[in-house]
Image (cartoon, rainbow over all chains, first blue to last red; front, side):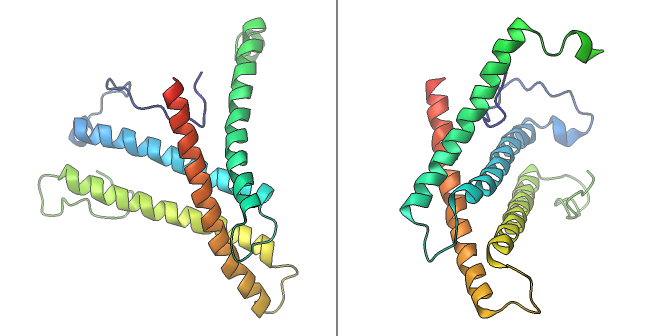
Length: 107
Length: 95
């Protein structure tokens, strides 16, 4: 199960379906789209994390970002990713014991 | 190709679409979108921090606060971006 925060490098053999338009068949363009899509996903996450961590770490905006706020921001990012991993791991564990998507939920 | 970004993809000469031109224009569009995103969130956060009860206009202290807030938000964004990228690198190194 892939973490939503991570953006693994695209595999050479893309799993995208064949396109009918000539531009999409161009391997250079396809590669470009893969790379840029990932980059955007990372950018979006940075935007989101900045919002979240700003709330937690910056009280009153001053003439500069003090050391405490800087440390808090870095910790915030790390702990967010830890949280994401924790959730995925635990979900996987409980999923093995009681499958989440089989049975009633999938009906 | 539909110009969903509202711009010409370098094919107006009638004929071949140059992938290089397309890629450059797409990158520009993406950069613009990111800047807009940043601005929107910054505005939201700084409005919350700096404007108490909205008056008839932005007074001097509010304006000063907003100016500082903008710079601090940029600092925060850069710090978060750096922290995220180094965590990403660390994770990939461990894979």
